[in-house]
Image (cartoon, rainbow, N blue to C red; front, side, top):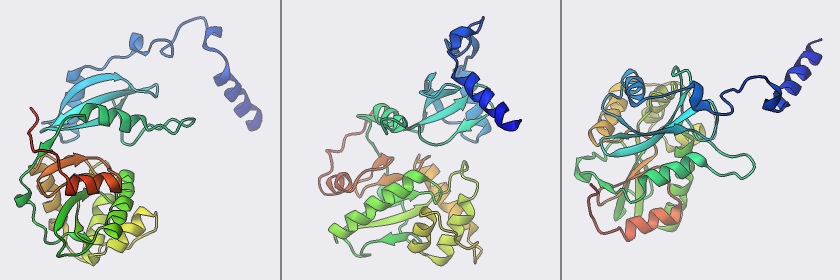
Length: 268
């Protein structure tokens, strides 16, 4: 009986919408649903980001979600809010047939031409995880989260850079995001062991032990540092000249920005 019920539901979902007597939100979602800047501001405040501001609101490529461009102290990002306004979705929207990353496409669009710099000297390099030679000429700082899938991707690119260039080293600051409930204790555990391998194991979906020391303050300090620098998402790369790149870059792109940085010009 359950089998036939499931099949019946599945067939119903496949029927053209025009068989129904009334139009629905599938035809025009904005007839039934609205999301104002005030709504977004309230959500951001509840999530602990009252300083963030919505720049643009539109229907996302996936029906049932709003796509919202936000700015927080100069950093721009993309978030998705459900039509109920009760849920925020973290992650990327990827088209199955084309493999196109629609979130990354939007992210690059809103950040195109926006170059921001921070005071590199304010970033303490001690207590960082290091990939590469400690005495390398170029030291790049990466704010990363153990449960951020994009961080795992940029981590692979970092390893490619180090394999090619011995004069570039990466200093990883573990900055767990509140949207990833297990990321904080994982950051603690990885830093207790001071183990890049444990971070890589975690990126590979392997289990890592619970924290073996009391280093909550160390993780809190990384989060505080990110906030002071206006860094609200991961991965975020800070180059030696202080230039901030939000999101991932491939190995070639990273090397180019390290060795041939653009002329420093603050964006308005």
